[in-house]
Image: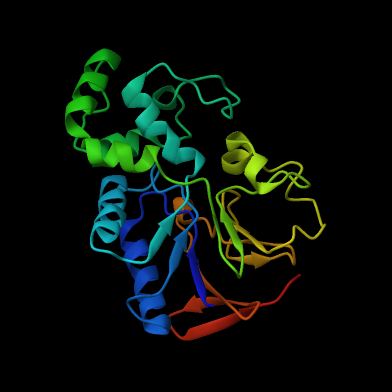
Length: 240
């Protein structure tokens, strides 16, 4: 059973649409596509990305979107602008941390991010559609398919999937990236930006660094074999 997957989008709507087109060319419009999350922040059109994926679900597209750590920021900010994600080492909230990309996301909703913090929050409550906030807040943490487990950051090795902590699923690096054991299924993930998709045998990282001007990876897994989708067709991804 064929599975397509797309890496961290980070507000890159044009790249997302192009990745979808590569998949449609390979597997048709009804292809099952899993997205590893991090839809928003850093790129120019987070609003457009959320709307595109939300509309696809409304239209009955066979699309799955798992929750990334960045996808938690906007809904949490709307609820409480002072909220600090436990995974942010600086201890600063989303809008006070320049590296997280909050400004780009809020600007995509038409907001002036130079406004005083209370006014910015008040305007965000009016500008961000409730459907967008709800969509991001309710994304599933993982998607298990016969070919692979799709999750944003990874898993805590040795822990049953049903008992995995959300914080690990959306933030983990140490303890997962260096682990070489068989996880029982291939783990497809993003979160750790590379230059392109890399197959490590027990896991496949598909975050090509779209947030930093690099490619948005689209891959296909079929009969246990992985391929990167390019404009010229499939390129095999062999375990390193």
